[in-house]
Amino acid sequence: MIVRASLLLATLVLAGCAVGPDYRPPALPATTAAFVASRADLAAADALPPEWWRLYDDARLDALIGEALAANTDLRAAEANLRGAAAVLQAVRAARLPSTQVQGSATYGRDGLNDALYGAAGLPAPDDWIETGRIGVSYQLDLFGQVRRGIEAARADAGAAVAARDVVRVTVVAQTAAAYADMCALGQSVDVAQRSLDL
Image (cartoon, rainbow, N blue to C red; front, side):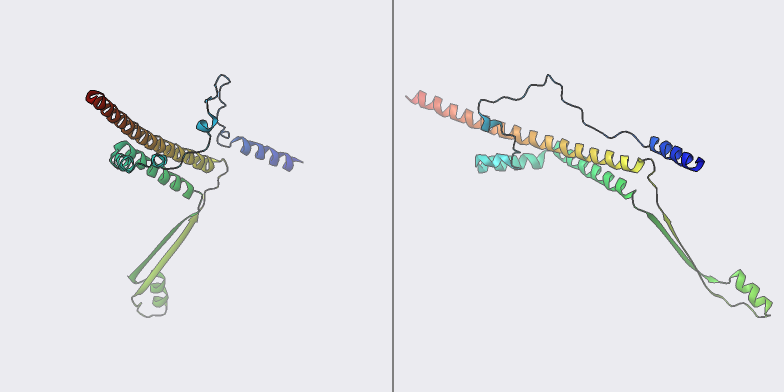
């Protein structure tokens, strides 16, 4: 009975030492209004295609957006942050794997044991190769969930880096497309004004 009680107590103590609660995203406030559009097809919940600006079928706009994406330093910084977060995630995941250490050496000379054996027999000890080797394997038991929580945190950081990169990319593309649309509209206005002047 005492053994069962102590096992139950040890299990409860170890369960209480787990690192942090499970993450749950917060609920939206009740006052949040839904987006309402006059036409349902304009407010579809489907994701946009990856290169949505190609829907305009304008080669000049495609070229301008390609140049803007290639030249934007904020986007390059976001890509670098994403690569860093992915590297951290990979390193944290590696903590789940056992680590091994292998060491070996070889020396030429005499060994103390051979000297004693040959000396006991009255013979001179010869020089010889002496090889030594050692293998070590270690594994971290994740009793308290530290490794698991570290992986969850690194995965969330990588997801945040992806979202930050996507925000920069969408912003660059949207601003370039808006500037191009403004330029086209101003060109049309100039054309209309010129026709009016001609009339």
